[in-house]
Length: 224
Image (tube, rainbow, N blue to C red; front, side):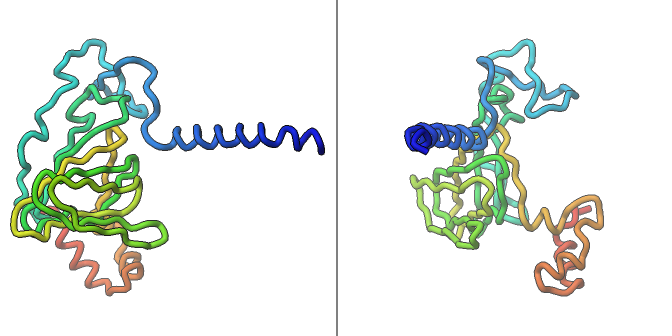
C-alpha cells in the first residue's frame, strides 16, 4: 500500500499523458509521415486518404477556387465551394482545408454535420444568424456580422441563415483535408437508391403522416 501511495502521482501523470495523446489522435486527420503526399486523385487504390503522386508541382498546392462568389440561385439560396483535397491535391495528409459559402438574401446553409472536422467561419461580408445544437439538445446561437468568427464543434448539427437584405459570404476553415458533409434534410428525405428511408420510419420519427413524408421527399427528388 505504501508503494502504491508513492507511485500514485506518477501513475496519474502517465494516465493524463495517455488521455491527452488519445484525444489528440482523435481530434483530426492522422499525422503525416513525410513532407508531402500530393493526392493522386486518379488512382483506383482505396485507402484512408489518397495515394501519393510520384511527381508534383506548385500547382498542386495552389487554387483560385474560392476567389469568386458562388451562384446562389438554388432551392436553399446558398452555395458551398470547397477548397479541400479534391480541389487542392497538395492538402493530402495535411489535415486542413477551407471553403467559401455564399448566401443570397434569405439564403440558408441548412442544418448539417461535418463528421470529420470542427469548422470555424469568418464573415467576409453581410451578417448571419448561426448556431449549433449540442448532444444535450441545447441550442447555441448568435447573430454574427462582418469581421466576426464563429466555431462549430466537430460532429454537431449546425446551420447558417442570411436574414439580411444583402448578400453575405464567409470563409470556413476545417481541421481535415476533407471534412465531409451530411445535410440532415437531404440525408433523410433524399437517400438513394429509391425509395430511400422507409416512409413509416420518417413518419414516426417526425410525428407526421406518410403522405406528408412523400410530399417532402418529392421536393428533394432530382429535377428532370
